[in-house]
Image 1 (cartoon, rainbow, N blue to C red):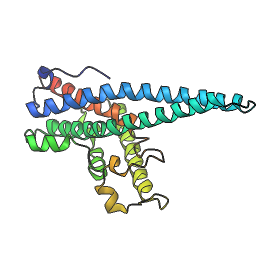
Image 2 (cartoon, rainbow, N blue to C red; image 1 turned 90 degrees about the vertical axis):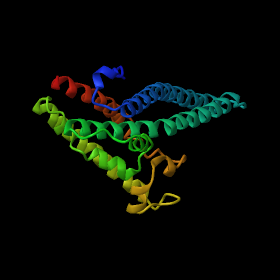
Image 3 (tube, helix red, strand yellow; image 1 turned 180 degrees about the vertical axis):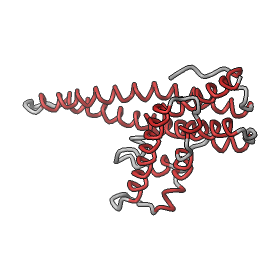
Image 4 (tube, rainbow, N blue to C red; image 1 turned 60 degrees about the horizontal axis):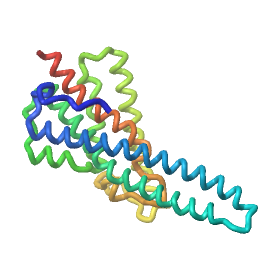
Length: 226
């Protein structure tokens, strides 16, 4: 991830807004490194376990495959735990960043400290969807028409992915399927089922990138006003 912009580059933000963005930025940055590392360990353990299962199949002893399977399960649990910690930060960083970019470009007053604190927590699915529906491309006025068109397409794809999460939450195969209203009000960590792929599976990477870009865009916009 890019370096977090200095206070001088984000002068239009209040202290609460700046501090919240910075706190979420560094949390996401650290957790992303840990997430990538944990996924690499898990992939390695799966490959080793597959090989051990193959070789131990012709042996009267299976110590290697049993031991590696145990470590692979632990690696899977740890990777999922990192994701469970990372998702609230990534989603909150995204929502707060979009909200502040919209506020700064629109010339509205700084958010209250209580609003900043609320936006710094994991959003509900409806809150995430609402933030992702803000026409961010039009806020990036200095960008080329091609860049804005690309951003509109990316926004469309993200919203389509969110719609897919609604469908996943309504799946009758889940232990507790949710209707549209229930899904909108839930937070994904609350609805997570360790037995299946996480609900944020296709959102984590693109939102991590988007969240970082939002903060940079605020600084870029302010620099153009000087």
